[in-house]
Length: 353
Ligand code: SF4
Image (cartoon, rainbow, N blue to C red):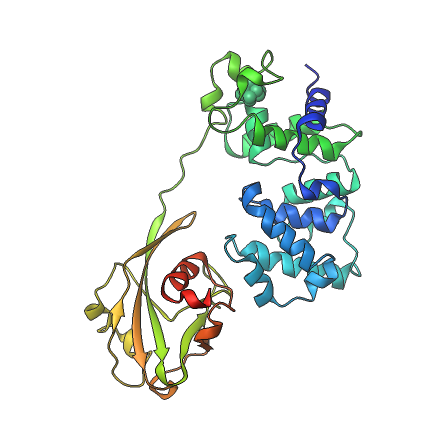
């Protein structure tokens, strides 16, 4: 089986027409790769179009504020990608005079750029012979060659096969072809084996191992976290209190509300007995109303959140903390917020959305 030439032939005939495939600009290819990590193409497309339109050159991205970039990224999740991308754009400006590095090892030094992203950029933008390994590639190669290993062993075997197969001719197309084949034919569930160009050669199909490859290591069950949010309305000025998440935790540098985290869901009455509650206010305050429970699923955590409304007359009734910001209700949507907070705002403050 001549895997490389068959898959390249297939790719040239059946590849999807995606905007980042019509450019060799390393910056735009990098942008698309960062956006598409852990993200489906249909979900990431709009973000790619908006980012490439607003920041067509790396210099423009480097000069943007973190708040603006996080706001543009809102809803895509894994926000460290956006923070690292901005950091790397500034690195390119400072260390490479604004010119995207062309060498694999130099690309690898950019913040947030791992082996996969560096290989994708080096091969697609610069035609370098460096093989990529991502989830799609692992699935295609492990099934086609019948690899039953897991973890790092599987990664090394797939990398070796890809490195042997990739040629000097069109290495970028070869990498994209294998990924595209995994996205369109050799999909995780119900792959299109009957229409597959490798039907006669695929080891997993011949050994009826398709459903078992690649072998999965069972993941850990996500742990719950319980968030009681205080939605503090300052009646006099029609303002609301929001908090910048400046600690090293999920959603770093995004905004939510003053928060009391506990190890279980608390009633409004019990919440008001917590010392953390008293620390938020200069005088005694009561919860006016509480929302229902919101569940928000992250990779390793399940957030169970409840929003408690507190009305105060003036800022002087608050024990204002460093990372709190007073925001006019009209501007409630100007800050970058996690999806959970976006859901809450769209229900309770729809005028601002
Ligand atoms: S025959 Fe099925 S499992 Fe094998 S490579 Fe083709 S689509 Fe994937």
